[in-house]
Length: 240
Image (tube, rainbow, N blue to C red; front, top):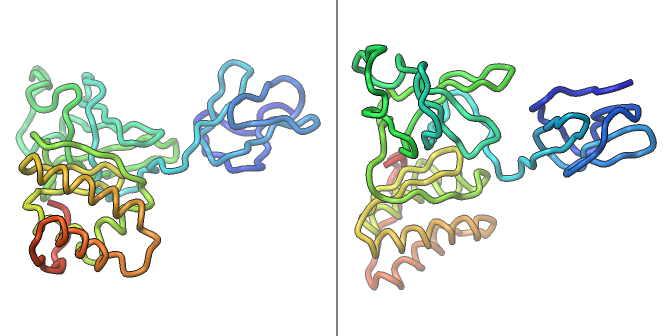
């Protein structure tokens, strides 16, 4: 009897969360006889005696070695805490924040200030879902200028395309720099009108990802708007 799961645990529909009458159901949970069950895939939140879940649909679950785009939400004695478009935040330690040595007395805002975005790599995910990041690797850096948009994480492979073909074609057609994070955040930087076209095209890819022949459809869409022939995507990886 009592609670059968732990705080911040990922639960699935129909999973029994608690038995007995000590707990109350709320958003994303329901009572059946003497049990409280989850009615959606979500992250369990325990608020006193109330059980609720935060839906995970479309949210990113951190995975080791993923390249992501994160936003600084806190600066601590240890380094920087990033929001990842995920139920979990992540830590970029001073040691992993730069190839340069960062002394303990340094003003960390000079490296990453609040609300700065950066391209980072996940280097560790513990069983308690503590996530560690690094900024020490090819292409990893603070992002300047441009804009960040959010897409469904499940659509990221279609946006990148096979061997980076889709995003490469889009970069060549618009002249924009594009970085697609595996956590569903995309950075776009270029001329204002080119940025608008790129963002619209990214959402079009996201919305039509289920259609066959998507690359050719997007190619024709871009050619009609730009009034010129464009090349198919190359074999390069689409991460800038």
